[in-house]
Length: 456
Image (cartoon, rainbow, N blue to C red):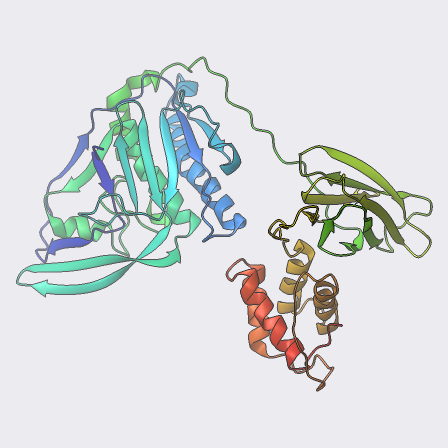
């Protein structure tokens, strides 16, 4: 893979002389050039290191960083403004395996892997012979060491596990897309001047200097950059639009989560056996503010083979509802998922498993996820939005439904006033996806075993 341009926040072994004289700057060009209005394909990140909110911000600011070129080029053009258009196609994680990239002129992906092992960098661009490739590093950099050797100052940089702000990723995307347009770096023959351009309080004279500012106010496309692009493409811009159809992706159905005080099954798993019958009891309670006498709760059940059926359960005067599914030796084995709807309100997803007990060997137990409303409760409790009692009720539900096991408990306090602060921290970290379900459950087991809360 031929990497023809590399941009770093600052290079791994950046060497700058201490000479203060100003040098002569040059603005190089690359061989690649768009032959039409480009289609830029941005692939959503699937990293577990970031929450979905953070990953959505990466996409948003990366798109904006690229579109900044369109805005600046169109604002300085008097004719053919539309021919500076940049088309963006965003590809969700679930659609990436089936996505056809044949029309992409540039592909943008997020990574935590260094690509050039000689110099550390925050982003990379190269042309793979068919289309431009951009990689944006979402891990932050930090100074590992600074030393002076004679007239040289040497700065060494390395990775850390912190995530780069989305605005910084957008800045890097602006620079890298400048390479895709055909711009090389804007460099001075005086290394000190290059250093000054990338160091506060100085602002870069070009968006294509060797280092990128994290501060977006100091990292902008300058008139110098626009003029250089005009030198490449002329007044006609990138050219005409390609005759393509942007691929459409089915978006998940929007949910109006709320309206349910509870939604659960009698237990998380069942075993079908020859000659015996059991029942899955699906129960819950709607909230007082949405209750309407005589209205049914609609329960969608998705079977292990993928087909779905709709069940109806009447919400009675006490706002509770219940319905049963027969478990006999003809029922499908596997994981079933449930969702309820009532008066235009949606529940969180719920699941249970049916295991095969008709043979001597029972299938391994299916993994049952902790309901999302418990995660929400944990976050609200950690933030002080709901009381200890409300949080404990959710934990009691987990234990009663056998989603978690708490083991032996003592008979000490039944009050929740002594819940340790580290449990509250655990709840917040778990709600934010920073620790696993298992780590969260360990804290709950501690509370129950010490008698701080009762879960039975």
